[in-house]
Image (cartoon, rainbow, N blue to C red; front, side, top):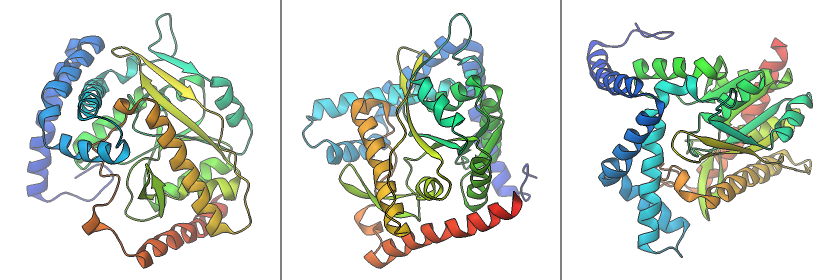
Length: 333
């Protein structure tokens, strides 16, 4: 029986159990090494082993499309540094309880904390949004240690045993409330924001439905939820970037909230604000491209690209779902 879900078929339990055994063995080694040596080993695995896997091909394709002016050598440098960061991030999961902005030797430096303090104190709720930069767990860790009350939004990994373990690591130093993406999660986010709390989310992943918004000059399906919630509730949209400085030390930089003036046309406003969010994330990626996760299938392949009618249907569905969220959320408050 999986925690909080139906019992898995025997074949799935064997497969997930085998995967999890290897994962936990590796995490155990990282735990024994301590955070700094684990991070260094993870970086070595990333840049020397994972860099040579087929996933780097997808990163090359994405980087060439995003930065046509960069040379092949520059792109390879970005990819290798990306893998170094990703390997380090994976190796740091057993040590999330040690990544802190507090104490005599903090591992997180925070820039612009007065901005997020003001947004959280505004009383309308705050969405601190970021992407897969550096160690992306640094933002909710720092926010929780600052005393912000709220929840983190995440996408579960496929293996339920691994997913539960990762959730436990997050909870050691980060927000105790962890919200899975989806309709039920969106309702919970709505309720938290209505109560003036903070929500921490990553907005740079591909979605199967939503709105089509430009990202590095190419259409990318993007969740409209942050835009919808801002327009409905007035919750602040605060961009945050996580940056790896040296080894297992980080800088979290908080930028001023996105300023947006609604026109009164809800569909148009959701589209325009979602484009603003994508544009903001793109600007942050451009500052240090090697810190972002280029192996995402962020853009659809040509054979996967929906027709114009399906793009529009996705946008309408995203906007319409907000009405259901508001109705359900209001009835529970």
